[in-house]
Image 1: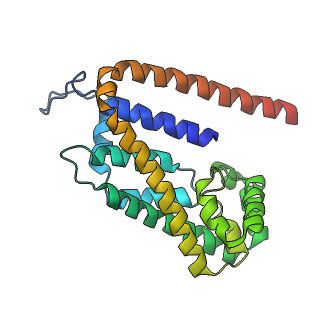
Image 2: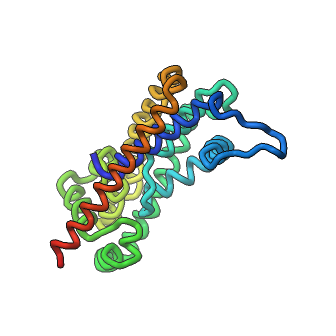
Image 3: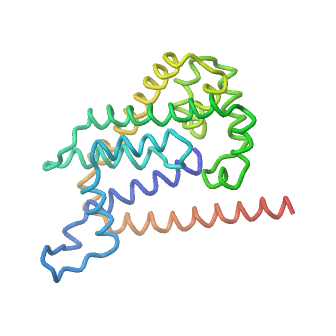
Length: 243
């Protein structure tokens, strides 16, 4: 499991733990009420999760922006299962897949128009690093594409790291766009179904989350600190080896 997915799952389950504990953190609606930062995040997330935001976020996830889909679809499904929710699970999957197709198309046409030299140069630039890109990652995606052909745009949507980059070698190879978007839609749709199932299962454990919400929050915070420390130490070790 990649580092990005670990962080994404950690954030998702932290959100679900926090969402399930309104009784422990009473919120008043008058002007004298004082919401904590956590409560502000929770309220904002519930108020701003809609089909347009899901589409936009999934479009970002399928482009070069480092936004994991694991923090988009599962929480949206979790919210959809609430009695007063305006969201529908099937529409979440539909619009999430549409967003993935938009983001993948951006990568496809960008690569097709700019060409291999510019794409690789950008991946190793400072701007590329901000998007967590590197020529090694692009090369890995291109090798996977060359080995699996057209179906790589379907299979690649299910593989971490390669998932949001597989559309780049498709563009570089000038793959037929109809085939590209068809395989992308199938792969993204299947992946979104998996993520939706994760949100559904989390909501099924709502009673347990309600009961142990505070304990779960502390556990996730500790795990997050440990994981962050490990990532920092690993990064420093790499820098020392290069030096």
